[in-house]
Image (cartoon, rainbow, N blue to C red; front, side, top):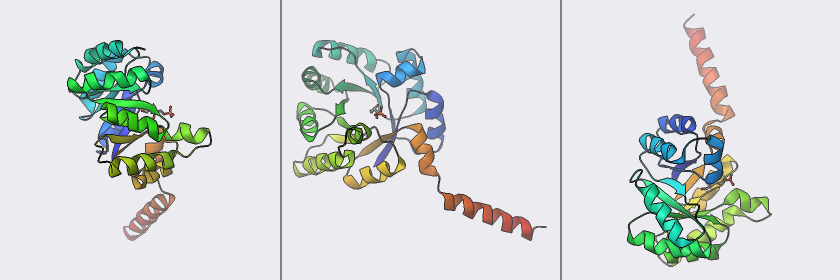
Length: 214
Ligand code: E4P
């Protein structure tokens, strides 16, 4: 399973990219608004940091408008992947975008049926939202597992981006469930690095080393 970061904060992207673990970036309209940055400038800057898919969401309500926006965003960098919302107009946009070789990420997926429709309409990626599913009493991990099982059973090539994880344990659960990618917020990635026994062990090594060299 590959690791993407879910953020529009370039400092966070730079830091995690420096660890050598990042294969891509996802943004969404809320994250971009929070950044206060010009959308296109931001995407160009991210493309200079990470050499992998960078999801950018279209805001039109009709499929023709989505395709227009997608063409415009794609001009920024070859790695721009177009995030399309899971609505009927979004489904209609996927085929034309696939014909133009524009990669798509169908977002706001909360059911297996939505994922199946997105895949059959030509989505490159589907993004089931785990945390938001759990927020309303569902199981995000089960959702990812069911999508993964069905895609495997029917030889569907669309890749699953497990999105909206809230804790490090989601990363493990998504990998076990068969997600191809997890897109993870900065705070969760930072927690994934840490383990109390690592810190304790390191301190012991340092203390022992220093006592030997006295
Ligand atoms: C996915 O692509 C979305 O940007 C994201 O994972 C949403 O996460 P949230 O539910 O924490 O806002």
